[in-house]
Length: 226
Image (cartoon, rainbow, N blue to C red; front, side):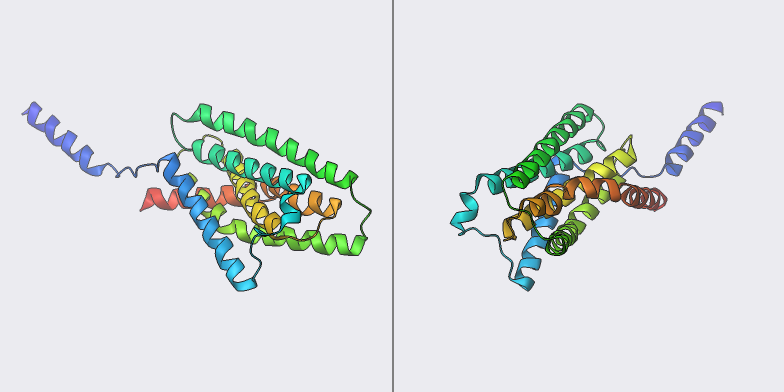
């Protein structure tokens, strides 16, 4: 009688358990974030006609422009991997290493921007503000799909430090957006490159860390209740 009651209790407990949703693999989550970013870039370019300057020899021969392009790519890649890896149990070391790599790349990127400032003439305040604001907004718009995708994957995972993960995810998504903007922007002023391109990932990481953390928490609660 006791054995039967214990078995019934165990079966009841099993029936009451909520189904556990698997955490996406890192390569799947990364591919999803990049795919949405590419879709946003292509859709925006199709509507505005602002395609990357693949045939612009002057751009590709400019060491400052290419160094900033590489720097944005490194910041974006390392930050996205760091954010997504932080939500996957067992990938803590990768998240830490990628986070450090993103920080070092960001420092190098700022250095590139300062290098550009030192090598160009002074820009007018009005044109500088308008150009920087335009590129910053454009980069953030392109970053929205990637940021939402990263937030979705983070909400399905188990990040130990949600604000850190959301801030890094925002920086990575904005880095992807700034990468596309830098490849299409024709403004070569040093202050513009620093303020409108190089600092975009860091600005987004600071400004959007809390909103994305709130969104991740909401989606996480919704997933656990469904």
